[in-house]
Image (tube, rainbow, N blue to C red):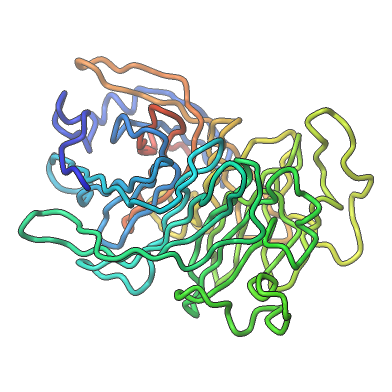
Length: 412
């Protein structure tokens, strides 16, 4: 089932891709020191009222693809920010995922547009919580959508489950669920430790607390680190010792970057390599939520330390590798959205021996009846960019929105 309709914001005003430049220049949002420049940034609502958005991606044609926790996929019309003002439409497709488990952090999570997609046919993978309260797991389905010219909308042609993690668990938290496609066509999927099963992150015969790697058909990649194991799930394991990985991107030269939630402190960015142990819960800079010490170890033999640590926690959510030039100050950086800090963190990758983190303490501006209303920044769930380099984030919760990042001022 789908609906194809203008956004609610468009019923109040023509879709505004250009805001009065004089007004923008007068609005001082914030200042950051980054690459010897001072910049001001604002977030502006593009689409209002998307309940519980979980992930946002862009295709090569400039559309946005947004997952909703309750199992729907929202697809926008093309965004061409350099043309005259235009109406933006969105289509919502119910993916009808069998045994979708919507509870706690569970539900539809991520969407990945496969390299085999073209302008009129899309091959997608989606990750989600599958099962019930007593037994649930992170799962992946392969979808095919095609463009129906007669109805001017996308049509879901095929959907099949290609991967279900094991073992199942009885908690509605820590699913991981981020997806990327490597240059060789294989898929990486992050899985969480299930919270109450944190020791399983060190057990390579468990799918909890891992980065898993498989082919598009769901079979384990033939050169995985433990492919010769007789244990079925171990053959999928690419890296282990993770808590709740919420960010996963491919950077320059095919580098794999992952971030994950620590407990109270110890949020991390990791550079992922095959067969590597990332330490959880043997090594962490965080503590238990009760304040108790989880481990006495800062380091441990044959366990990889993170490239970046956030203590206290920022609760990192989405992540995007920015290689465009529109926001030149962000080129070759990781853009990380935050649920707790409610900001965008920028991690420079120009010097891997000295990874630095800078906060963008943005503000939200809404235009109502020609007045500019300044609002508190909400929890930020995920981030992406169009092929043009324009940056968009989604806010978290029942009243989620798509927000566009705009640079208001740049001073040398």
